[in-house]
Amino acid sequence: MSNDNDKQAMNAVSPSAQSAVNENAEVAVSKKRIRIFDTTLRDGEQAPGASLRPEQKIVIARQLARLGVDTIEPGFAVSSPGEFEAIRQISRELQQTEICGFARCVRGDIDAAVAATEDAALRRLHLFISSSQIHLDFQLRKTQDEVVKQVREMIAYGKQFVEALEFSPMDASRADREFLYRIIEAAIDEGATIINIPDTMGYAMPEEFGPLFSAVKQHVRGGDKVAYSAHCHNDLGLALANSLAAIRHGATHVEVSVNGVGERAGNCALEELVMAIETRGESLGAETGIRSSEIFETSRMVSRAMHFPISFNKPIVGRNAFQHESGIHQDGLLKNRNTYEIMDPEAMGIPRSMIILGKHSGRHAIKHRAAEYGISLADQELEDVYARFKVKADETKIVTDDVLLQLVGESTQTQIEPYALVDLQVLAGTNRMRIASVTIRRTEDGSERTYTGAGQGPLESVIGCIREAMPAGAAFEDLELHSLSSGEDAAGEAVVTVQHAGRRFRGTAIHRDIILAAARAYVAACNSAIMAAGSEERMESGA
Ligand code: KIV
Ligand code: ZN
Image (tube, rainbow, N blue to C red; front, side):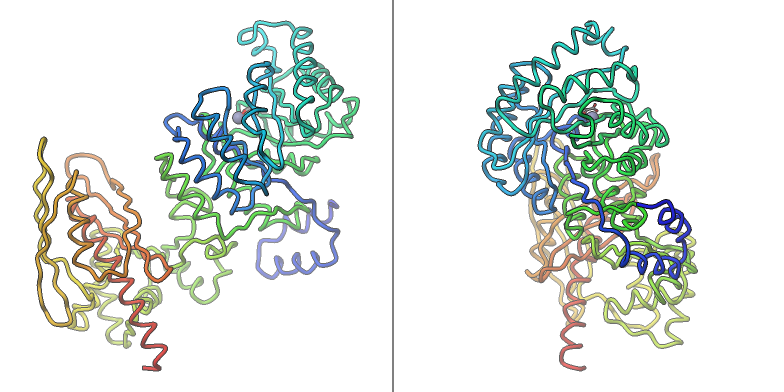
């Protein structure tokens, strides 16, 4: 990759400059293939509170394979029989993906990692040991000579079983440089084929971490014969920048985790690295083999299984990552999405529909959102809805879809939603089943029906009632609850996702009664699905 290319890409802030870069790409040299090493199930699982059951690991590993990661590190085989079995099953099942066994430079760990991955069609063994002086003195309590000896013996031992052998000098970015060269040289001498340089404490700066790779390659005997890998933690928020710096300095493998989960502040996030490479591939001269369309699904699956919520403003997968509230942005976006988006969320499997409507939104955005529900607003109607909308937005900050539909209904003097929640009662308590009663009105004929049900919790019983009341097509998928403020008067926001005819629909509602918010959000999601199906039918019949 030339410096000229770099400079050009750095200047590429406007779409026209971007397309110039893209044109240059056609004559550019071929891109370096970056291998994505996923450690969600090993380092990711080390995040406090994120532990997974073996069967959850298997489901996530299947999804990682669908996503197209090159290597999966499914866990630490020696840590428990359940972990060992999960790694064994993943190794048996995923024959197209490289499976990596993880072990300290200790015989028992290596035996377990080798046995657990025995049936993998493609496999790697990953051995690590501390390399910084502070770790040697206080953790290992060993001299440098002792550590080098241990590395030599254990790499030679592991090499009997596998060809692809990765060695990680833990805390490399804080290690004495001469010792780091020495320990890596010993590992290569005994047969290591991949040198992984971890920034274990997330301490390095990109301008230090990148050149570390070039320096190791240059100073270590055999350093030009092995592949290089980066493993960055995010304590200073630099994991992505450091991983990209490593790529610029020769790393061809990068260790990442979905949603950036991992020890403390986590690891470099898979989705951030992949999309940085995809979006700025010309600047980096790099590409990956990831199917970006699976990113969102994978992120949700990991977040749910680990009970690890994703922050709203998290790049790529956070719910605000492609939300545009300001009227100027929404207007530009609706005219040409490149005005305010550098990536296409739909290409990552992220539903497009969610422009947040709030006090900064303009008429254009309201008209567009109504049209998504198959409602076409005439100019005068739009003015009226807009005036009501502004009053509402001042009150509530966010105007959820169910509220917007109510406002449209008031302006046009029609009932827009196919179904409306008329009444809700729930009995909660300590020892008994929670009992709910929900009354739903069908707008078309005004008929009302009341459904009752019981569940382990009030939400479960309410959801059960609504599920019965709504037409069978929309399957309940997910409920997220967020507190929008603290204190006794805190309002809760509920977001419900349903599936209908292979598509996802979301409904949101806000209320101080969180059960009521969840119920309204569920009804709103079902209404979206029903209305979308209706407007598609109308479009097909030309009506
Ligand atoms: O952060 C770290 O150093 C690690 C290694 C063991 C690769 O997770
Ligand atoms: Zn780590």
